[in-house]
Length: 242
Ligand code: NAP
Image (cartoon, rainbow, N blue to C red; front, top):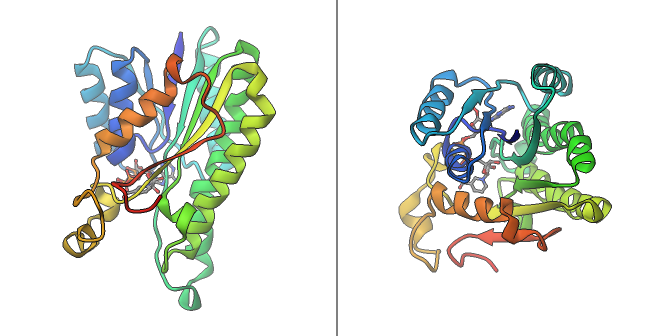
């Protein structure tokens, strides 16, 4: 069986992606960090669509923990592979740089960038051997434009773009595509403390995006129809930045 793994699948964009990939017929591995209740809810929603869902909690920022969780899963599923990987887990720890603490820098970079490295490296071999795979990473408008107060987040997201472009070229011949989606403001827990009213006025579409809209884009990149798209960064931001 070919599975899809979504990191940070318990809430927000990750949850919507789990549901989208389940609708495409994938059994879904739902990774999360601490919020078991939300992850259980995602699992129920996936199962309500008639698809299989498994919770796979681990901290993507911790290489050993990630390896251990994925190795255990693979040992228990010798005939199964993860064919679609969505690197979605991410956090914000905003501060202007002059006051940014080491911990704020490291936690954001470790979660987004090191998480991408640990999980993608671990799952790549099977995709290359199977000569089919989809690696889709959720970056951000911050990684393209840079946003003040988010030097850490912007750096991590920009690095994901560079890493994905390089990897796409390494493995393109094996029918494994590597792409990035770069959302603007999307209605999730991550942005709930932002001033939506004033930010909305800067967005040509006049609203924040929905997690389901990002999930539809991820679903397309995961599909067979997207086989010739690789090394791309696709913005989904209501026209905020092009
Ligand atoms: P969210 O609602 O805050 O959800 C974050 C998800 O990441 C949760 O499932 C969380 O798990 C998981 N996570 C955080 N740290 C983790 C770790 N160390 N290990 C494993 N999982 C971890 O955020 P969201 O808005 O859906 O964001 C999803 C992605 O989109 C992030 O990469 C974010 O940077 C990106 N993004 C979001 C927006 C936006 O406007 N919302 C815009 C651009 C990009 P728990 O539930 O266990 O905490």
